[in-house]
Figure 1 (spheres, rainbow, N blue to C red):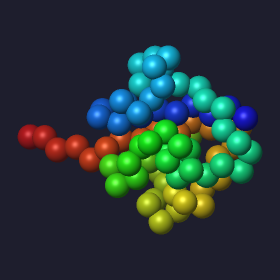
Figure 2 (figure 1 turned 135 degrees about the horizontal axis):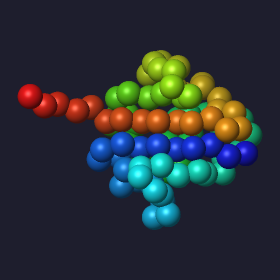
Figure 3 (figure 1 turned 180 degrees about the vertical axis):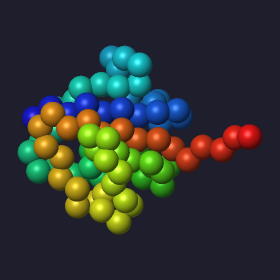
Figure 4 (figure 1 turned 30 degrees about the vertical axis):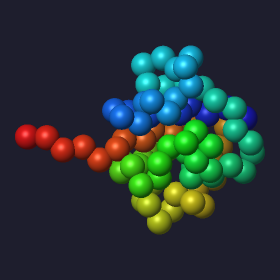
Length: 83
């Protein structure tokens, strides 16, 4: 099945080379979890601050068990600071 993976800011370096504007459509196995997809792309889980699936926030305690579905959009931001 296919999902869209969007990695923002410093996490973008973990996207495949063919990614465009911080996002890429990828194939994942049926039953794959959000966490499994991130680990497969070498995204450090401790750097995943804000995680959304189809625009809905997924709390850290729910990420290991959140099963993705065909067509989902997974968007991830690292912690940011500024002033």
